[in-house]
Image (cartoon, rainbow, N blue to C red; front, side):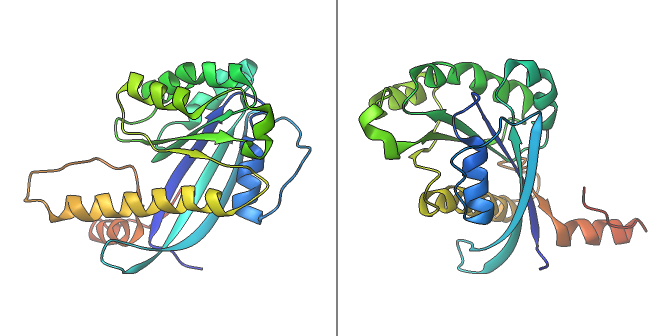
Length: 215
């Protein structure tokens, strides 16, 4: 299937919070109860159809890099942060330390990604609420502390509905930002969004007599 936009997403967070399970649910609609620890990074991609603010349909290819949470691979995985349009910051609501480590993961994102990266916080495993160790109020306070307008979702990798919403909503937001940016007067730009518009790139490459290769 052809597509008009190419977007890079990264998934970060402690080991064992369910990052790979979230990815598998979004890509394959499959829940894997036992998953081997990610070594370095895992990669997957999916084309979704979304509507922009004018109700026009777009095919968007989302490339997703699932990074390992172990400290051993920290220096390796951070090299994949570059060029990310969206960073999904995941913790496990049943393990307090995975939430407490979020500040460090957030700092990594801010240091390694572009200034315009969109960040989403995800509290995973909300099907285990009886084992909950992190309350929503704590997440709200964390968001207030970093002074960023960051959306927060609670979900479980056992179901796809909320997970689909997370990825699709971010894709819609990015396209709408690009549309708003293009409507501004010449010389006035609101964002520098790291999203590839294939049509625009192809036109530019043709003018310069270059071939068009994505990634």
